[in-house]
Amino acid sequence: MTDRYSVIGRPISHTKSPLIHGLFAEVTDQDLTYGSIEGSLDGFAAQVRGFRDEGGRGMNITAPFKLQAFELADARSERASLAKASNALKFENGKIYAENFDGIGLLRDIEHNLQTPLAGLQVLVLGAGGAVRGALLPFLAAGPARLVIANRDLNKARTLAKEVNHERLWVSAYEDLAGQHFDLVINATSASLTGELPPIGVAVFTQALLAYELAYGKGLTPFLRLAQDAGVPRIADGVGMLVEQAAEAFEWWRGVRPQTRPVIDRLTVPLE
Ligand code: NDP
Image 1 (spheres, rainbow, N blue to C red):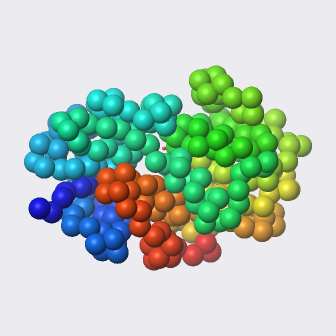
Image 2 (image 1 turned 120 degrees about the horizontal axis):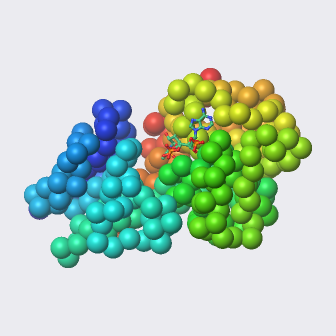
């Protein structure tokens, strides 16, 4: 029987997940369908359970439901627990399992696709929202020399750092970044979604090898433009992260990992 999967979010019309998982299913010869569901703000849990009760095997979760997805699960991975958010659910043995593959997808894109291993690097992460929560465990496990989180709401960053409690994890106010040097600068704020630049100066890029923007499909965002103008040798947006987290979920559900490069190439929008 054909297995059913879906992504749920609100709005959902922009989603690339059905395309990505459709391509994965084709190349790995998996018998499945993958659709999309517009989530209801007051009926999300019922929609998830309804999909499962009709034979659904798993779901991807996107904004604004990642927290609710985490809460309704019966069992949660460590990564999802730290993030307090889930971007993938699996329905098995009558239970709902929650995972969070955003962080591992980001790490894999940076280390594998962009060939920038984190070990020994000075890393700056802008933002302290859901995506950063999901990324911290895999990032710290990769062994950076220092990982600094900067956020407008400094208390949010401090709370997160306290929860993680790792000797190489630091918190900084934006205004205290002046004079600090980083090998890798990651924009994990949602500023680019509204065409804004987080409050950074060009100096944060002085030593940077790579500037990475989590938002994708937006071309040269203000963050990437600043990095490019500063002469950063490599800039990238989050399309690779999107495809890599999808590959992780696909493997979790199906037991087979699809190749990601052809799908990344197909979805890439030029950074110009
Ligand atoms: P959240 O809403 O959880 O967090 C938003 C963060 O952005 C907060 O830290 C907030 O700071 C900060 N922020 C928002 N506007 C500004 C601004 N103008 N200047 C400085 N900081 C700002 O979002 P997520 O963590 O879920 O997502 C963050 C980004 O990552 C989005 O662009 C999203 O599209 C992208 N993303 C990409 C994925 C991919 O697969 N490529 C997957 C998941 C997310 P404060 O706390 O001070 O308000």
